[in-house]
Length: 155
Image 1 (tube, helix red, strand yellow):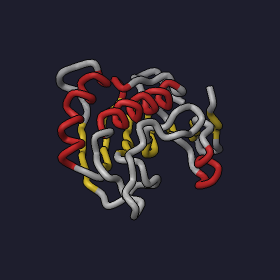
Image 2: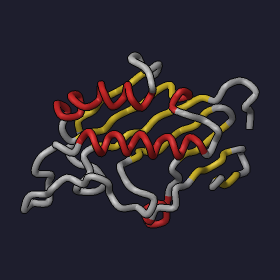
Image 3: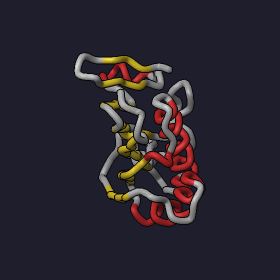
Image 4: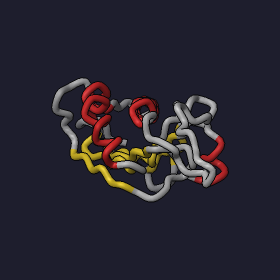
């Protein structure tokens, strides 16, 4: 487990990607039974973006055809972070998808979310929000969420 404990009972989880130190943040924070997952994206274990969007000459995504691949990898990364606290996507109660193209995200989200959660009707509140830009130019989606551990999982 790659977590750190803090005086008020917070535990922090990390994936050891370069921007954790550069920006200065944790991938997730657990307080009691609640887990707050920072915005996740589609990176591999060394921090390289998976399925990066091709950029135009202004540094903006040329198309959004990699939305599904990025979304799938992002859910995989959320699962890795949750696992550090003994949780899974079944523990997620709310998620927010920040996307550059709402139509492309909406087209991919139904199938990808159902696959990720393993059910036709994922049991979590979900928000899909269009934004002008994300942290990395070739990034099309970022997902943050909140999860709650079952009873008996007190810190």
